Length: 357
Image (cartoon, rainbow, N blue to C red; front, side, top):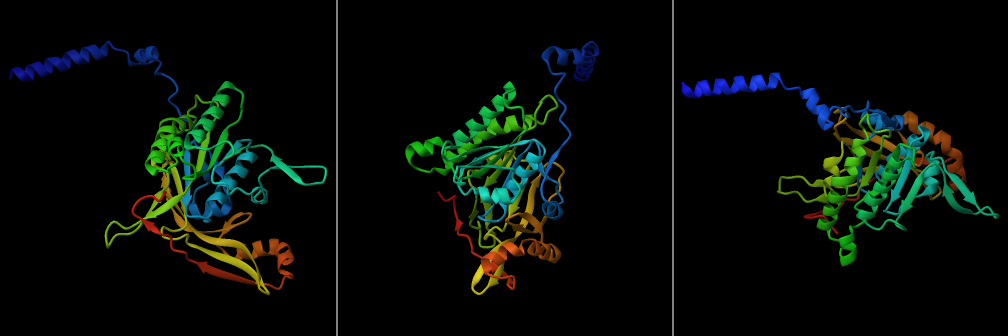
């Protein structure tokens, strides 16, 4: 009985104290009464084909986005579509190219607005335009990538770079950490640790905080993530698709799209062939939204990637694409009377017990 009375008395005292306490005043005193609202979600639209197959508008602004898959499955196509969309909305694309497979002609073909600089003889000397571009000439490590992003965010905050920024990194897993470089050993554990420290604890927080109403700019980070295939853990198990560079970016990302299959690229090549000559003008590939913390939609389907971007896996659209480009292919093939052939290309990927170096 005594315990019950003590408990009742304690509750009464607590209630009396709370009745005289102003939570609003406390929040105001501690600076906790503002900056809690997030901006309405906006998207960088990708191609109609991407939207049709995924039921997603494109790239969610203010988020960490991963585009992952085996080689040549459409990741770069999606990245360039995002850059083209950004330019049309006066958002500044920032290319961080560490895998060194970048092709300016491909980007131009897809619609990226680029000023081609030429010398007096008409030879191309450089490319310029409404974008920022860096590569392995100045970016050598994971720490360099993070430092570069943070520097631009600092310049933006100072008012020296008055743009929303779309960071486009190609790719995670293509550059080691500084410790790996100094030891002359590409240690996956060190690299994963650097990704966690440099991005999980720093860069990614700066990106996602730009979604708040208090931020004058909205910044987005889109990363292509190289992958590897892990062996099945049991005789009845299945192999798993794993991200190079660890899973720090997976955990921080709110939107992940996987291109291709687990054990192979899962693509089929579509070619125009005449007299032994051929033009590979498209690839059919699986695409899947694996993670979506924006609106919860996860989908799986097939899409066709071309040098000009994605088109729907539809006979009518393929026929139209052929009609639009037949003249260019005819120059290579020596005539328009060519055959269209689809070649199912399956190259099984090696399975590993741990991430290959």
